[in-house]
Image (cartoon, rainbow, N blue to C red; front, side, top):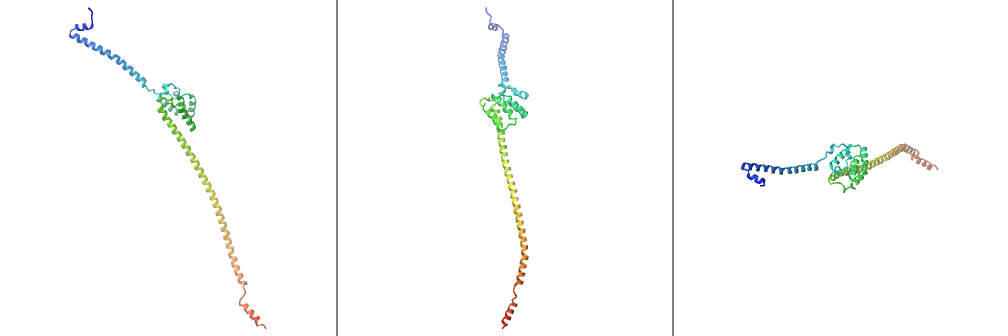
Length: 246
């Protein structure tokens, strides 16, 4: 006679059957929960690895530039830390650090641009490294593109500011030159006016002297004319004497 679990269960009384059923239910529930728990742990571990955020703020600025792996350079938080560290460098140190990186990929170009942007570059140099960045336009990862676009927009604003400053300086030089020309013209006009005034004053003095000389001469000539005029009373008397003589 073969023994089976079902026959043994049927041979039990009511109390034994209830106990056996309870035991089977507990075993079934326990077996069904073990794989589910294991699956849940695996999912949680994958979620943690996928969503783990690297705290680049704890990385020192002296070591931040040495990172060059794809997992790091594809993280925008790395570039935020790099930009922060670049601002802490002096212009000379920033240029020196930029020269250490060969510009053979997009991340090296981006590092150079971030460093040079704090190196007191000229507008021409800024346009040059922005143009070099554009040469790798199809290589930037999707996670870095928004940050790169914002950073590049800031660089464009700096170029526009430089252009406005240059235009203002040109206008200032032009206005200064015009003001200087007007001052020179004013000085020349004042000199001409002073010469004209001196001439007028000299002519006025000459005319005054001439008028003062003419007044005595005119009185003397009138007196001389009166003295040289013949006496009308004596002329008829002389004629009458001649007429009376036979």
